[in-house]
Length: 259
Image 1 (cartoon, helix red, strand yellow):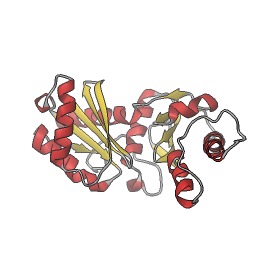
Image 2: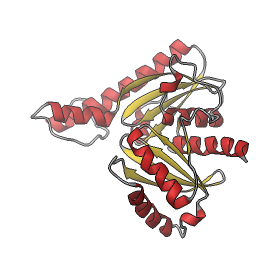
Image 3: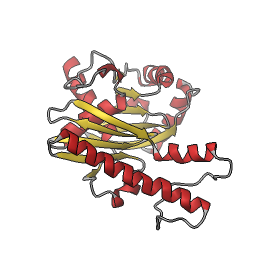
Image 4: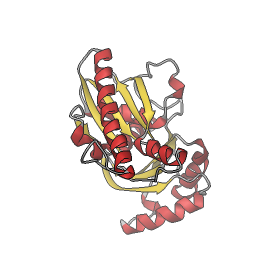
C-alpha cells in the first residue's frame, strides 16, 4: 500500500492508496519542529482506526513546499515503513513533459502533482485553481506540461493580514456574505474578502482564457473551492483530491520503471 504525503505551508496531508483507490486521508498542521517519531506516533494511531499498521505500507512518495519538514518525513518513511520514499522534485523522476516556463526548477512540487493529475483526468488544456495559502492558477497545456501560472494571496491569508495590520479590525471567518454591503465591521470584512475573491478569480480565469486563446477546462481544488464554487460559474469541476491523485500517478509511473 502506498503512503502519499503532501506537505503544504498550512497543512500536511497523508493518504493511503491501494492501487489507484484512495483508502484513507488525514491532515495535520504543518509544524517544522515535529520529529519523525512524532509523525509516526500520530500516524500509527490513525492507521489502527483503519485496521492497519506500518507493516501494510510498502511504498511512499513525498511532495513538499516546506523544505524544513522533508528530513523528518523522509526519516519516518525509512525508519517505520522500511522504504525509501520518492520525492517530487528529484530530477530522476519522470513527471511527464518538462514545464514550459523560464525557470522550471522553481515550480512547486504540489503544482507539478496537480499538473500530472489534471492532464490525466481532463481533456485539452486545463486551468487548475488551487485554493491554498496562496491562490494559484496553473495552466496545463494540451500536451500535459505546466505552461505558466498566476499566484495571488490566499483568502485566509488576506483576511488575517487585515486583522494583523489594522488594530480595530477583528479576526473573522471566511464565509459567503449574503449581501455585498456590510452593516458592521465583521460583515463588511467578510463581504470584501468573499466577493472580492469572486471577482478576482472570475477576472483571472477570463484573462487567462483570453490570453491562452484556446478552449480550457477549469478545475478547482483546495479547502475553499466548495465555498466559492456557487458564485463562480467559470469553474467547471471541483476536484478535492487532485494533488494526492497526482502523487499516486507519479509514484505508479516511476515505480513501474524501477521494478
